[in-house]
Amino acid sequence: MAATYRGVGPFNGVLPAATGQVIGFARDPMKLPYLNYVQEVPAPVEGNGLFRWCELEPDVSVTMVNTDEMAWGFDDPMPSGKGFQVRARWLEGQTMRHAFPYTLGMRTEQGWLKGANLSMLKLYDRIRLGHATLARAIRIISAIRSYSWTSLVNTNDLNTLRGTSGSYWDTSSGEEMLPSGFPNPDFQIIKKTLNIIQRKIDLNTNGATQGNEYLMVISPTVAQAISEAGEIVNYLKQQANAKADLTVRNNKWNIPDEYCGFKIVVEDTPKATIRSNADGTQASVTADEKTYCWNDDKVFFGSRVGALDGGYGEQNFSTAQLFTFNGPAAKEGGMGDSARAGIYVKAKADDWDEVMKGAIVTEDVLKVAAPASGFYLTDVLST
Image (cartoon, rainbow, N blue to C red; front, top):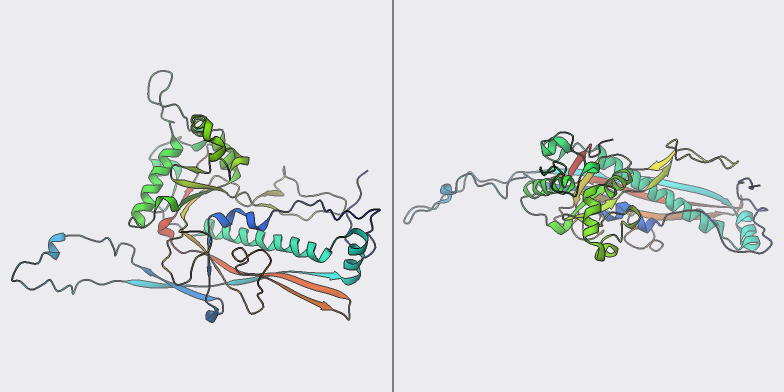
């Protein structure tokens, strides 16, 4: 008979032989999907969490209505250029702070250290760190999905984008011709979609973005669907000798890491929306009480210039930028410099009450700072 879950206390950490082992499924915060599609930008210290950036009029660098306007005849005065001007606007933001606290009795920490060779303090820090990064992931996803994407410019449903009807990624075929000998209308729907979006992003950014910077964020629902689509099955079949190299990061979803110039990121961060009961009753997968943070058939396309770390005040074409701020109490160490941007630990001992208090603190905000380098596609699946 399974034992009942109980809150850890000073007298229930004694084992016949201390193993130092804890069985609890916690994802490594350094491996959360958002680290592969956002860029972290440190907000300036002097701004105390406030930041801003300048956005030029989108087409200013490629506007050329009539080249004859620039003609300079010999022995004639040079064109004055009085009609040329650069227009810009300032955009700003403010980081938001969140705390994930806990209180742990000193006797409980001592009891578990002596009886089970386990530090509850370290375990609490680890679990709360997981909560902090999960909440950050949820905020990032919400900011991208709720952004006011411009219709026909950088958002559409699949069939409107392609000018088709009944066209979906999960029904995409790898066969160019039907058995009847006629062209297959479902041939390479995914590839054709990506080609259209890549062209849109290239034109929207005036050719400033590069193909190796493009990425595509999909849900596990879409990942599973396209892994079974004829187009992807056929693609991996043709690359049989190289399949192990093509499906490294996305191996568990059986899809390639990159396809048609886009790095594929599966946003498979899970979350439970109810609290577990002491009797062991936990969130149900079938009742959607435990699910993925991104779990439908909407797809985010973006660009990330370089790696995870970006610089404040630098020209940046990255679509989704996570502005972080390390407040006065921020400390180095722990997860590593990049993932710790805007994340720090607070701790103190209360000898009077004989408890230790701690908290994981985050300060950040996600901005779709360069929407021209992104696209938001909806309704890519048939069901």
